Each structure stands twice: as structure tokens, then as C-alpha cells.
Length: 279
Image (cartoon, rainbow, N blue to C red; front, top):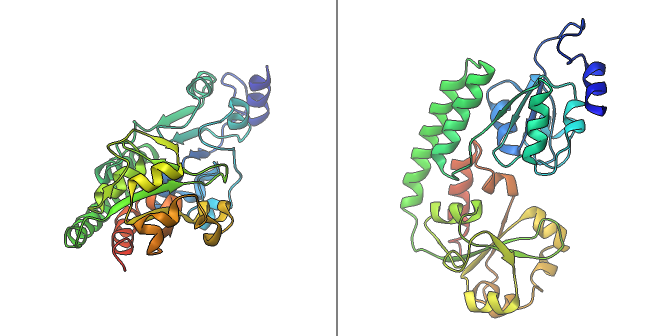
């Protein structure tokens, strides 16, 4: 079998006479990777996935592909002895395959898209890695969130916001309820105009855009790049017929920064909350 051969080559086959070196860490998911580096364990990371772009040291690591379309062979070939993955990493049968061949896997519980979940993840990952800075980092994050929460509560108005995702460049989608984007909009005391319409992401049509009549449109830097830049994005059918389009109120930020639910979340939400209220 391919996996057995890879295990023998990397010294991971239990029962062999190959000595196992110190733990080698593979991180799956940008939030997991950020937490590991924030805990001071980045030097133990030998590879990660393509959503792991921060900090720069993480972006420079070898990649195993996209976190939701992993392969068992690809994971095993890294030589990792421990994999830490976000809840959405998979497919599930690939994670099970890797576990079954003896590689340790810590997969986080389903992301609730709350600031509290970030603190819980810091503690869970820190415990697994026996990181001495775990509680310090968790408390620093909690203090930062408390400060950010107070700032957000003082922001005026409750702007009507539409979040548009188009990172692949293959068609814009709008964020409904039960998405990281919708959770972020609520946290900055704004209204997601699509939250009451549906859950998840759906293709954005001109009719839906006009009917939603958002005051502000949030998108991502990666989405703008995939769309061919801001000027091309502004040509989205129906956009110039919305209050956001007429007033050129388009806010663009880094995807992982605003949607990743990482230790940077407090700063990201304050920045976003202020940006969507600027005239």
C-alpha cells in the first residue's frame, strides 16, 4: 500500500526498528497555525495547508493542499508525528485513515464562531503541545477581546451589511446566516442583510443585490484580486443600484484576518467595525 510504504520511508511504522525523532508537527487550518506560532511552537511545524498564511514564517512552510480536500498520502508523506487540524479539515475518512496508521491527530471541535471559542482553542492546542505560554496567551487574548468589545459597543448606528465572497474568481457568493462572515457582522453590531434569507453561502445575483439594499459591502482582498481589482468588482451587476454602490462604500480586508477567528480577532473586529461606519 502507498501509505504503508510512506510510513516505512518516514520512520513512522510502529514495530519497525527505526528510531522516532522529536515530535514533528503538521498544522491544518489558518487559525490552528496562527495559534501554534503564537504559542511559540512554530519551530516544530514542518508543514501546513494553503490557508496557513500568517505569520510569514508559516506561509513559507511546505503545503499539503487545501484543508477540506486533503489526501492521506499527502499528510503521511510529510513525516509528521502529530497533526493538529481545524474542525472543518478533511474529508473525515482521510483523517480516520491517518489516525489508523498510528499518527496522532488532534482535531478541534466544531467552530462556534465566537470569541470565546478562540480562547478555548488556544488552551486545547497549548495543552496538547505542553506549551508553557498557554495560559498567558489565553488571558492576553481574553483581555484584548474585552477591550475590543467595549470599543465596539460604543460604535454608532447598525449599518446594513452584505458580505461578498469571491476568492476563487468563479462567481460572487453572498454570506447568509451560520457563516463566519455573519458572525463577524453581528459582533461589530451591524446587520447582515442576508441572515434572514438563508444559511451558508449562495450565488449573488443582481436581483438579490438590489433587493438587499446594503449600506456597506464587505469583501476580501483576495476576492478583489480574483475579480480583477476594485474597478472590476464595482461592475458587479446590480451593485451600482444599491446604497453601498452609489456611495462607494466597499470595505475590503484580508480573509484570514477577519474570518479566521484567530488570536488577532479583537483587533480585526475593531478595525472592521470602524471601517464600515466611515462615510
